[in-house]
Length: 238
Image 1: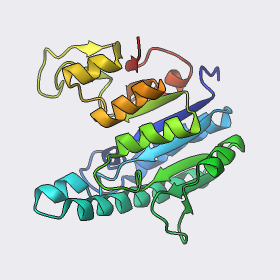
Image 2: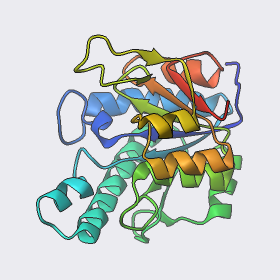
Image 3: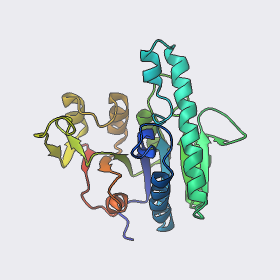
């Protein structure tokens, strides 16, 4: 496989792992995602991953129902670790060497996140899954993805979603929604487009980490993106 990048960070939503369901982990979806990631790792690409926890518990949803926001966010962080362990298992059953590194220490199931150790794992060809977000409440897994990508020097963030890019309005509701092929960070912020939250976009802008938003439900989209093909929407400084 021709590679346009040396190192990527793949941002997966928890909802993606639920497949057609709204909650839980769909094993068929998990297996398909793991197969694609394994193929990327085998090609020599350094692959790191951040997964959300929305298929199990979402902190903002808990806070909206009256829970303490910090407490709800910590519960959401634990949900991301569950998803990380599920993906690790799916990858290792395919012979892919994997490490889960958690921002909240839980030594029995994961390594603590240490930047230099994460970089070394990637250099050895291991897939690194970052769990528990940033380890802090009030920060999304989008922000965790931007932070980790900047810390370990990723060339790009691939945000895998259920839609084929970024639109000027919700394509699920509006038939006349227009998809963008390319946007600048400032365009995303000024238009309030739902690519990632504003903290994550700002962090990517300040550290010049491009973002490509693509549809994970289309098999092979990730491979096309790492080969440099114009899949989905690219967000850069231009």
